[in-house]
Amino acid sequence: MKGRFTANPFEDLALTPRDANNLLDIVNTIVHTGFERYENFWTVEKAKVNTDSKWKLIKSKENSHLPSLLCVGASSGTLDDVMLGVVNPTLESMRVKASYVNDFSAAAVLANVVMPSNENPFRSVVVKWMEQDIPFQSTGLVQNRDYVYVEATGETETFDGEQVGFHVLHSVNFPQTPSLPNRVRANMSICGFFRQVRPNLVSVYVTGIMNPVGNDRIRRLVVSNMANAFLSTLKYAHCGQMKKLAWALDSAYSKLKVFGTPGPERICVSCSKTVSRRVGDFGKGGDTCKLCFGLVCSTCRLQRKISFVGSDLQLAQRKVNFCAVCLNGTVKNDACHAARKQIRSDIRASKASRNMSLYSDMSTVTSDEPPAEEPPRFSYGFVIF
Image (cartoon, rainbow, N blue to C red):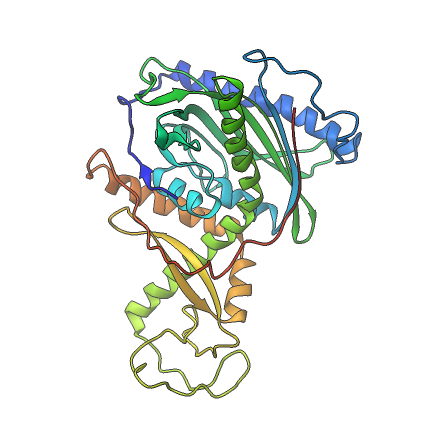
């Protein structure tokens, strides 16, 4: 993933109270309308996509239609895991989210309307800019598409009181956000809903329309990119779980600075097998769980790639070792608690970012090795007409 994240590629966007109220009205209308469609899909259509009779291409004519997209599927985890993964009201949290779900190539936060709070840790309304790389863009034959949009996250209830999470992305325009050089301004309107269907399973339902701008060949490229972005919603729960691991590591590191590194017995904390010291590993902690600091043998060691935003506001990814007890226990922890930690961290990061230059590139630690852990396999349906 490329690291083109900026503080703001435009002039400062200062929203008036009227602007903010209009954006809230837009979000509420989209959520209300989309929720009615979702409830019909859930109760009348029994959460099934009829690809034979309803979702199929009837007719197409160049420059005369807006592609409509539908993503239906399920991911392991809880609703709170999904919402922790999707909420990203700051540049730093956008970087972390993008590192896990890879949904866009460049992005910026332009203005905040509603920020998460301790009472509503998943509620946010933010104006953003993002860019998606288009295949063959380097040839000069096509240009990347970018979007200025309002993004909203939060939770609502069904008529019988069941919690449902939502995620809205809707294109907006302001005089301060003109088209940028070497990019084509496209438009979109996307609304997703998330619902706990079993103790460790969340259903995902996302609909949207978009205007990719361009001829049919370019439209296909742009729609294909947006399709990948739609499918990234199935990784939100995984993103939320990795955020919880990151916060647990931060807490463990804070304790480490106070109490020092414990001297663990040479016994695996998972299987109780003796772990022999290898030549040259004196003083190294590569065979310890980074949460409990107990030794873990090569068979029991579990590795995850975790994304961190450092004090310099740059993002780095590191492969971290865990034991099974710490890993499973942490990913099952309360996501709301982790979200409130993120709120406090975002406040600190926001204060620090004011002292930095306008543009801040994202740096990552990369490896030629395959990822140590892939997100869980998902079932999904995807249709374009």
